Length: 76
Image (cartoon, rainbow, N blue to C red; front, side, top):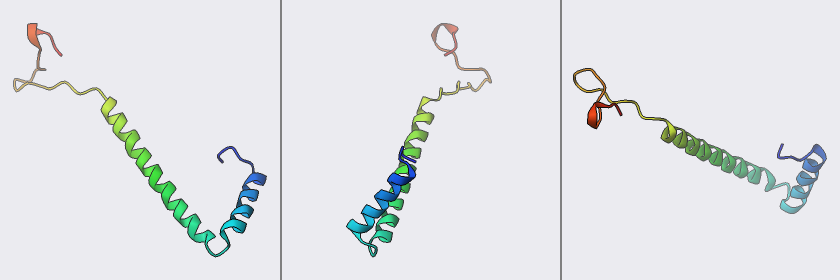
């Protein structure tokens, strides 16, 4: 979990309780959770668009049923 152990995580929680307070901590945790979720969704969308852009395009078929050929009678 982010390269921290259980003891470091407990210290972070205790410091957050002291600094933020027990009243606002649940609201802050909820807000951070939503923000991380949005970042994850945005990252997935970017990854998906890169994957789609990297795919080779399919060969276009001509109306006579064969593949279109470029100049000189060669295929694309």
